[in-house]
Length: 100
Length: 138
Image (cartoon, rainbow over all chains, first blue to last red):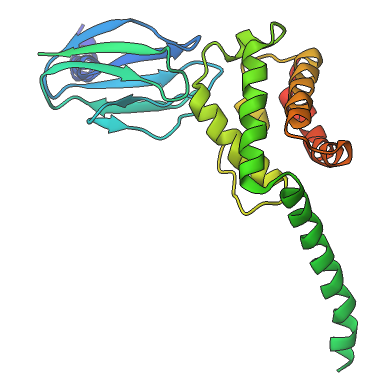
């Protein structure tokens, strides 16, 4: 048990980091969820698990380079509000991000 | 002096090659002609029951813009296509030879409408042909 405690303590910060940068999957030319709520200043990591190239943009906030399958993009949302995340290449892709 | 004499034929060959490239771009009507051909082609693709669903998820304005630059470069015009290679650009679409042939037919129709002579059409299509194995994946 004594040996297990340091190991369990090690897992705590890892879990905290995982919560800070939430992951959205891009697959089948769709986002994995249509909507997500986060706190101001939090980031979202977008993982391209698709066969297609993707990028993401939010009007007046960010407009990323294209990412190949298997690559990630992490973007912060520093302002409160409701934002539509879209892809220039696939205009039907839409994720609504509510930043509280 | 000998070097100059030896290099002169090479210079002529380079000039001829450059002229041939420029000639196709000019023969297709320059950028304005290529723009018309691309617009008509894309209109054909979107109306073609055989292939129109391929474009369901695409940004058509972006596609037109990329085709115009790429066609310009292929025709030897003063453009530089900076998009992805054809294999990556078509990955996930799982296109067949029948799809590729339909795209070529629609392009030929657009070139007919633009009044391009058959020989000019063939010169351009000959430069597209090597892309078939990169575009078709099943």
